[in-house]
Image (tube, rainbow, N blue to C red):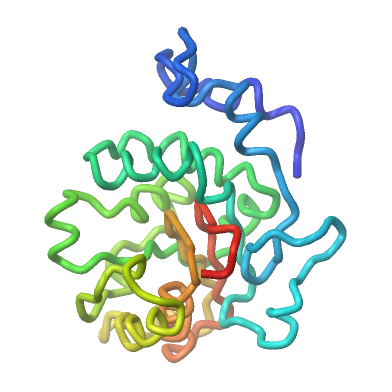
Length: 235
């Protein structure tokens, strides 16, 4: 993880009151709160769960490798980030994408993954949720991570599903099985390519794994993921 970025992390944003501590003037999240709540921590390279320092891959991923070649996460899905993500996608504040994507891009390996990916694909929403929110939060993040490689309509949501948060772990994988697919006329755009999936939050990983399975079925050579927040316990 590179150092020296925290004090000026949100320097590009307009001065405001820190959304966490209320300090004024500050960026959307001040340097002190960023340093306190977004401190780098070792995470498994395959599932992004926390691991002891010096360990690259957790035991669960060694025993049962997931369909993601790599997975990156910026912060734990906990205070204050869980509340800021809720503001971002549920309260009509897409402007948070700038700050959240900047924090994600600063994670060791994410910038390189964006550069090496042939395609950067946001996790798609079903039509009802997209209409309710007015935007796809994953698309907003992807466009800020790698605008020149982002494709908004290549990975499709084939059917609406129950919210994952309402389901038990075993139910989540069944809930999203077959929920994603590649645009039928664009399979050739996927074949042999390196794909980076982008999402705002990862809990069990069921949705990302289902999307990765659809991309691999279409011929993707590699599929990785970058998420802003990750639950620190297996979902």
